[in-house]
Amino acid sequence: MNKSIKDNIRVAIQGFSGSFHEKAAQHYFNETLSFVYCNTFSEVVKASEDSELSDGGLMAIENSIAGTILPNYQLLRNSALSIVGEVYLQIGQQLMALPGQTISDIKEIHSHHMAIKQCEEFLKKHPNIKLVETEDTALSAKKIKNEHLKGVAAIAGEQAAKIYDLEIIAPNIETVKNNFTRFLVINPEQRDNHEANKASLLFSLVHEPKSLSDVLITIGEYDFNISKIQSFPIIEQEWSYYFVVDIEFDEIKELYNLIEELKHKTSSLRLLGSYKKGITI
Ligand SMILES: O=C(O)C(=O)C[C@]1(C(=O)O)C=C[C@@H](O)C=C1
Image (cartoon, rainbow, N blue to C red; front, side, top):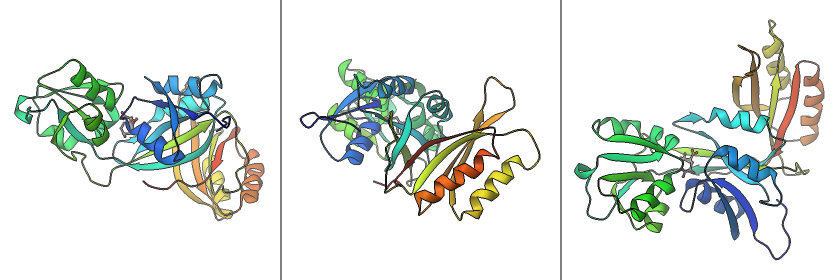
């Protein structure tokens, strides 16, 4: 992140005051921030690319219950942004409404689709409540407060209930308590990070026997740990895929050697970023 001495770092996030993105960014940077609040992930990417608007951004990529946010890989691929960091946030989902309301008053629940997915087991027990997908957990809470919406509840974090004076009518409604979201810190500049011990590689392959296994075997020969492998479609070329592998290593020099070797085993190869393995907060 670039910043002049007197200014706060400006971070583009998906969501608004009280959102999980805001909380993750506050923990990651651990200093006073100025937020560029965005409605969509595509706006986050645009704002992160624009140095007039921001010093970079933070974007959720996967949740331990709801899975990967696949469109975010397409957004990253289509941008020139690099991954420069990551952070894992424990997510507690709270059902909140105007003070005095109880679950039997609720006709509609509003939230971000990833938050709704994390609470499927709880929601199955209330099949008559209509689910409304919104841009953001915090925005759903804000709307209830601003429009004084009776009969409507939001799924959001504790911080949103505090900011928007809502009452938690069902606490911690996520399907399992160990619920974590991984956020990527994205920046137009990939600077040399001597602390880097993790990297994300994006590649495509020819459709031939062993093309993927050759890549994986090569990574294994370097003794790197693969912490994630994800494929997503190459939309211009039906039934062809990009792969992203996240790898963990001790020596950044070895990463560059691996990349040189993989250039001969892939049709396209890009280092999406090298960064310090994230901590869980
Ligand atoms: O709506 C929010 O508060 C967000 O920050 C978005 C988001 C997501 O995109 O996954 C972040 C963390 C939680 O997993 C739920 C929603």
